[in-house]
Image (tube, rainbow, N blue to C red; front, side):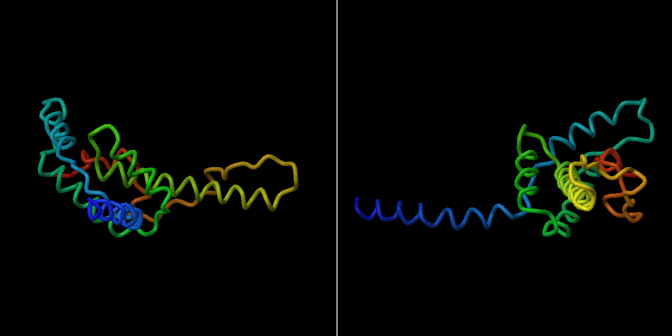
Length: 159
């Protein structure tokens, strides 16, 4: 009985040290339910040219996961925690949704930072404003930020 209690206490003390390390891992999301839905919807004869097979969808999600692996360290811990939590809520999730969430959170943070920096240079008492579309530089062509989220859904696969 005493050994069982000592073991339980040891486990309780070790677990908090293990959990933060795992929280920074890229989650493994089950994209199959979403891909099944996309594949079944793409059999509609009116969607000529937009047909996506289950395998194409899964392959696309694997490519997005590889991109996530490359960019994972560039996202803040708070954004990772928030976006992973959102991705795992509600059942069906995709790597595309997770990456989009992380990119949007990063971009909003950058805009807010730019607004704060520009307002601190202005006169006191003025209301800070976000940069206008003409002052925000577009992302380089081909970068993930240059594609709209709607184009990065699994339906974007080209045959």
